[in-house]
Amino acid sequence: MSAGAVPGTAEAEPAPRVPSPWPARLRATWMALIVPLTLLAFWHFAVKWGWMQLIPSPYDVGEYMIDFAVGGIWDDAFSATLHIHLLASMSRVYGGFALAAIVAVPLGILIGRNEMVRALLDPFLQLMRPVPVTAWLPLSMILFGLGARSAFFLVFLGAFYPILLNTIFGVRSVEKRLFEAASMLGCSETAQFFKVVLPASLPSIFTGLRLGLGLAWFVIVVGEMTGVPQGLGAVIMDGRTLSRTELVICGMIVIGVAGFISDRIVVMVMNRLLRWSPSHHG
Amino acid sequence: MAELPILDVRGVGKIYELNGQKIEALRGADLVVRKGELVCLIGASGCGKSTLLRIVAGFEKPTSGQALMWDKPITGPAPDRGMVFQDYGLFPWLTVRQNIGFGPSSRGLPKAEVRDTVERFVTMVGLTRFADAYPHQLSGGMKQRVAIARVLANDAEMVLMDEPFGALDAMTRERLQDELLEIWQRTKLTVLFVTHSIEEAIFLADRVVVMEPGPGRIASEHRIDLPRPRDVASPEFNEVRREMSARLHSHHARKAA
Image (cartoon, rainbow over all chains, first blue to last red):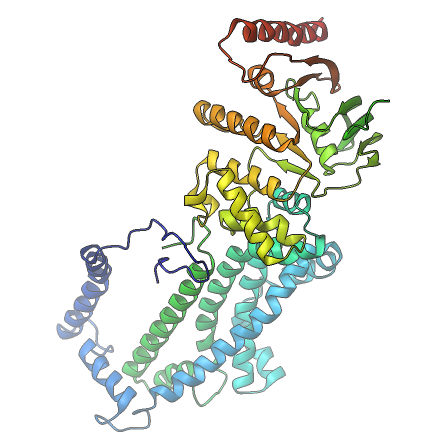
């Protein structure tokens, strides 16, 4: 994960970056755990001493989580169904996100680079932007019916704007100097697209992708309120209707962890591709 | 009778339009540079020295007159005129090697040739140890070395330098001045160098072109006949500096009057 191995270069000198020593890393992990562990303890005692009536204890939630994941404890309708719901949500999150990226990145580059496309599309897109994704829910149910397609659409919409806006910003803020440098070195204007515009705006594009993926996980709960039988959002909604709070909390935890892991993956890819950027390594 | 100059600037003027207001940055500039010459443009800010350089680079079009290279009008930026910017203008996503190889590979040279050229110029500017570093890992002096190597690796015939050492500390600046002279003498390059330092101009140039503002124009030209290597502490050097300084100030005094 560190920049030690530079592929493709023969006698590459290793970058002078010292890998963080174990004690430091251990310390960081410990520091990061203090607040969640304290909150967990507070939750535990708050339930135990009866401050909160309708909330299950952490232990109950943990037990239910195991049942939700592998079954064998309660064996009800939700036992051992975690993977089904997780996969359903993931396919919508990544599907909607991927579609948003495929549309928003080229569109953003086009709007950023082309005066005419900008005049044509920018006002419209800016006008649509303040409408919250949640407000689209009824309309998307009419347009796409009750079910997965509606959720997919909402995720797409949620991820679309951050990717688009950051791409436009990145493309428009490429230093003029770099175009001058490229053209005096004999790089044609068409070649400058791949050799200057794209690499220079990559940090912003990645910021957009990261925000977009975060929002995709954010929107999935709303998206799966549209009457889909499977998905983590559906689990949370069912838990609410059935007054099974432990199910609601399990759904929240799974979304949190899944969202966290997918964000780490994006960050890892980003740090790899943006090794050159002083604000992106480590 | 005279051989064809590499650069012939004829009556070049530049008027910018800024918020509906016309600003005359340069008026009627005439300048002839011969192959292998090192010419410094010097003057206070607003004298049009950078504008003239950018017109020669092809980044700006003159509003009057024309600039010719080998008797052909300059229509835009091209690899035969390489620019070294004060703020380096390196590609931050490319390593030192890749920055230097940018020009040759953009022009479609075969890979092996690009690699050889890159190695040669990495060595020439003394950056072998940093060949795979990214620009943000380099000091200002190293960045400027990369910028110079990048232009040289691209077979530029004329190197245009826009206050290239202006952002560097004094020691680094002196080192790079020496290195530039050394490369210039070895490669027989033609250099057009913009500076606001009288000392730098006299130290480097065969010829110093003094410019003055309001509107920007060429005021006078001075041949520097001091033998090289020049010693900035010698009485002869100081004599020339005093003269040049007086000349610059008299321009200003005349303008103020």
